[in-house]
Amino acid sequence: MVDPSTVVIDSMTDSRDGQTYKTTTIGSQTWMAKNLNFETADSYCYNDSTKYCYKYGRFYSWAAAKAACPTSWHLPTKAEFETLFTAVGGSSIAGKMLKSSTDGWFRNGEGTDAYSFSAFPAGRRIDYRYFSFEIFNAFFWSSTEFDSDYAYYLYLSYYYDEAYLHHDQRKAYGHSVRCVKDE
Image 1 (cartoon, helix red, strand yellow):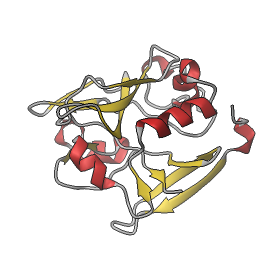
Image 2: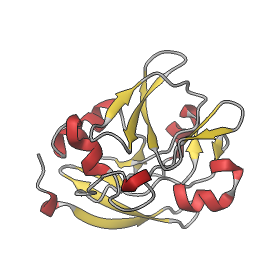
Image 3: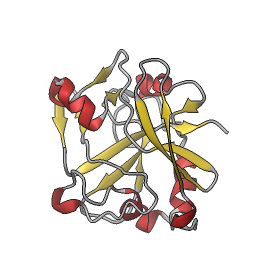
Image 4: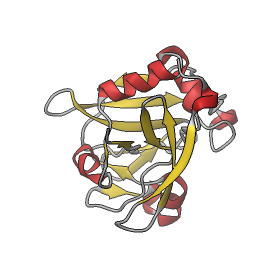
């Protein structure tokens, strides 16, 4: 487990559109500490309103997510999420450690944000422009494919301290993206 006092907070600016993202270095990994908000094909704002893109970042289909991160950054693999879980104390408490402590979660989500990852409950986009779970859940794509229809994603809920890696959602669904810096 990485000592939270050793976390390095910084920022990076996406040269493609000038947006600045807070970053957090946890152990050997540097993560964006804000959901990606770079517009691409097959990316969407919650309720199709740009005001939500500023608040939550964009939702990306899995194919769009794989190409959305800026140069020198990439969509994390399932293994990189697992490394993150280990660094913050294991998957059984990773949700609590990674969720923002006061921002946006139903009943404050009971997160501590001990590692300044600041996971925010943006919800998701599913088929036919239907959006769901704002304030309750966060979904982040991984680059690891499960099969031709499904890919792994990180799931956080306001209700649980755990962080989960699931593969039960279609690649066409829109999930948030947190990029990790290339090593």
